[in-house]
Image (cartoon, rainbow, N blue to C red; front, side, top):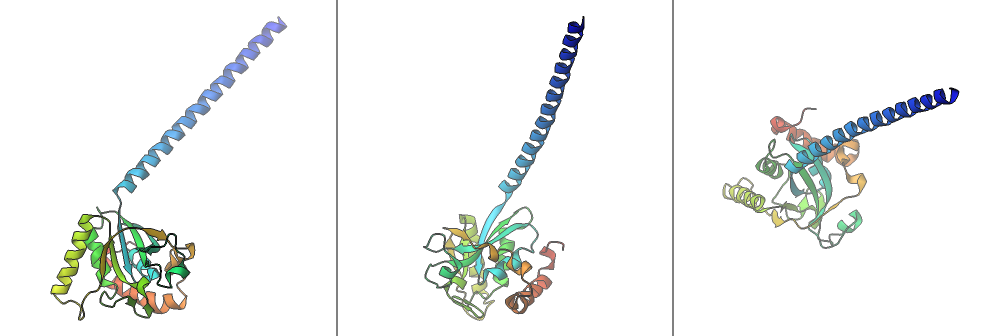
Length: 225
């Protein structure tokens, strides 16, 4: 009789343990399904994003400005258009690698268009100074648009021609419009530089006044702070 009771208890324990495992797996499956849905949602959102790559001189300035725009999801500072693979900042500053300091901008075209980005591009730097922006001198500081497709090329050239014909600038526009070939992310300390170093002299005396002026003109296109 005792053996019979023990057997029944063992069967009960096995049943309860099996039920626990099934419940656990069910919970994990639900969690996995949620994770997969989240991944699909993120992937779908990323698939809607497009890329623009601009050089307007020092990439600290370029990054700080484009980060403020509605529809811009990320801005990465880096080096584009050169011949040396994985260049360092010190190599690029020599002007011998062919790279321009540039920013890779991921944006949602349903919120902000490439035309809007071009409008900002032409407005926040001097496109008439060759290989120079203010005190920053060298080919790495050139004004440049790296287009990613034919539509971007068409829009960039059309905008440039219009500005030239209407003589918006007193001097000829020297902005380079060239196909995108490469982009190398700059060192980590260059990323989000202005926001993390606002008290640094260059940020205080160069970027802050430029950013404040920009915000007054483009206030309708800015993200809510």
